[in-house]
Image (cartoon, rainbow, N blue to C red; front, top):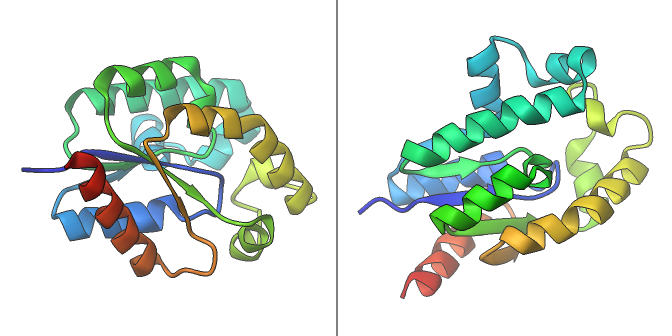
Length: 172
């Protein structure tokens, strides 16, 4: 039986890396909502945000996520701001899919992100921008999360193992 799981969290927390590692451990497919948007539009996410604005990107992102939630059987990593869209939160609740919130300390996130050229929403003072995003998004993350795993000071494989262990506990 394939396990269906959604991974959420701030930029730099490891959603894509951990999601892919969890999918490999569970032997199910992996998808990333940013990749789905790029496949759908033929344009990189950064370009969409820079030229069309964040609101336009969020609409495209929601469409890609909602379509994927209908027929995807695997692990799906959502972009950091996907949960700010009400329809995404509502659909996550409707499909009752386990949602893992990955967290990390602000210092850890800044260290991981480094160069923000490919992350237009973090341009400028990355630490301040992350703090703003965390404050705005945390209630949404908490609303949708089934379980939370702190990734600070942990490698991808250790986090993936913890996610799988905790997921199995939730399913029992």
